[in-house]
Image 1 (cartoon, rainbow, N blue to C red):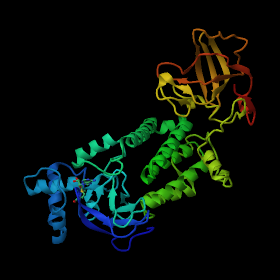
Image 2 (cartoon, rainbow, N blue to C red):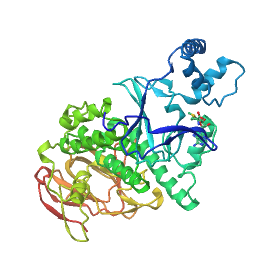
Image 3 (cartoon, rainbow, N blue to C red):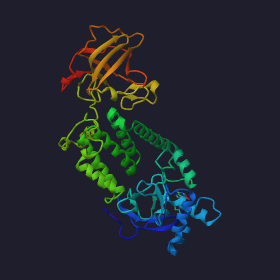
Image 4 (cartoon, rainbow, N blue to C red):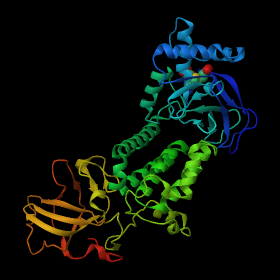
Length: 468
Ligand SMILES: C[S@@+](CC[C@H](N)C(=O)[O-])C[C@H]1O[C@@H](n2cnc3c(N)ncnc32)[C@H](O)[C@@H]1O
């Protein structure tokens, strides 16, 4: 179970303005299991109608031992009530913590339900399905005399969203360290949390499809999230959500080497927040041993690697560059490896016309975006179907064959048949991807100087190109 407190390392005390709460009676190291307990009352969200819920609750409360019942009845109830049924139900609603196989139930716990909220909590709650108990782990070192706190929030949003959620669901105004930051720091913190939330939405909307259609972009998003979490303050819970995403992106593309490293990081985080008897730790330990056993393995093999390809002897910084597939910054005129997929992205990895991609642009909105670096779309022309606009069938660097329209601006050159031929390579600097469900994908070209001499993309192994 990892490091577990052998005897209570906290007392329940009155906390000014918060009712009761838990105070550490000794220093508690990060990763310590502070509490492990079963519910005294539990209610399933799928337990049928309200009558059945009340009946089940009555039976459970009435069968509690005297001391337990007293303790239950002394718990906070933020809901108005006129009879004991309403009072008991209010106590359950105010105090219940998520539990059950799919967290589809709520449980009242004698000790854990006395823990107050902080947005930058020092502990976290988790329903451990293996031991059928709720656990509370320290996610930071907690000093003797410090209050032990967990987060009641569904996710860590900006200050206003947090305050709204807490007032609505728990009827209090949070005054934790994060909520009490001076205005400029609070704004900075909110901007980071907003970006983390935005990335969550992009990843969620992209779904499994985006893992294989735009993996590099998705990996970039996860890396950005991790950096933002690190910039704010160590947040084991936030990191514990990000690294599994990185694992999925790697393994969905056959990259066993990186997936193994990401699984290792997930195991370390989950050991701290959940404990080594949790199903999630067992799952990621198994994935660390054999990343390819994950159900997403084989969806695409575009990043195919083996476990032997983990470059163990690299300097830590260079290792991180490898892990996140960071491109090498190429100073003006330096030669760039054509296998570098960040500099020569596939069509699906190109920035989208409607997004402000942080990996490609320096900007906060689409209208003013400017390239933050060089990139070039390379594709071998397989067929030429028309010249106005240019209509070709191309094979991109991932071997994906797609029809492509290339539009030029009002001052754009005309495409000539001598320059556009089957077998030639299309090279478009700063290409931006346009896709709709109604048309073929297209690229809009402002300065069309892009068709180079023939080259078979399948032969590009270690060749070099000069980017100007
Ligand atoms: C699950 S109970 C926590 C234990 C509770 N303090 C008690 O005395 O039993 C949740 C309630 O505690 C209070 N509470 C929790 N965190 C708080 C905080 N940071 N500031 C003020 N009140 C808080 C709110 O009344 C909330 O509805």
